[in-house]
Amino acid sequence: MEALFGILTAFGLSASAGLNAYIPLLVVGVIAHYTDWITLNPPYDLLANPWVLIVISLLLIVEMLADKFPAVNHINDIIQTVIRPAAGAIIFAASANVITDLNPVIAIICGLLVAGSVHTVKAAAVRPAVTATTGGAGNVPVSIAEDVIATVLSILSIVLPILVAVFVVLFIILIVWWLRRRALRKRQAIP
Image (cartoon, rainbow, N blue to C red; front, side, top):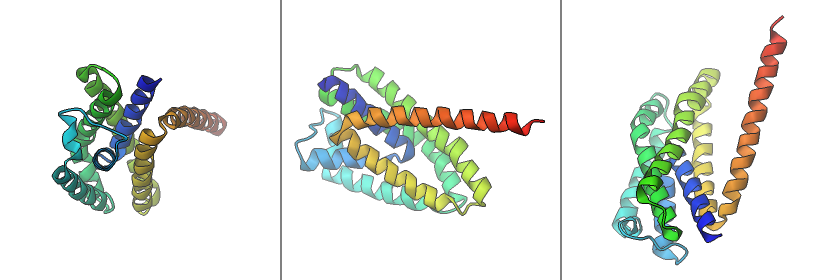
């Protein structure tokens, strides 16, 4: 059961990295540094180093500010196309190896895929749609919501990893419902 929770934690944290690369890194680093909830194995124990936490915090501030300004947020998403999947790979490998003996290469690939997928949906589908439908006015609230979701998901992934599984199932149900509803509207619109 502990191994399953470790994998759920890893998936939740890497999904969070797809929204914001630095939030899950900071959450894991702070929790590992100040509590005994997580003990990171080398080389991932560097995430709990105070200097690394300061650098991650500064990068988080830059990321959050860049994501709130029109046009800058699109440039930021292009830059983050490399950073977010890499952060997802690191955080997946770090958190999966805390409890399981998952091969680091498999963990890195899983983290890359999860964070990269979330980032791709965000940067290529959600944000352009928000920009187009709101003239850019909706980008700031959506960015704030993404940061809140990334923070809550990161914390829940560590504290209550089973909720990550519930969240994923509910998210899949919501996506299927939305796609069916959209297809139904298209069918009704066609004379």
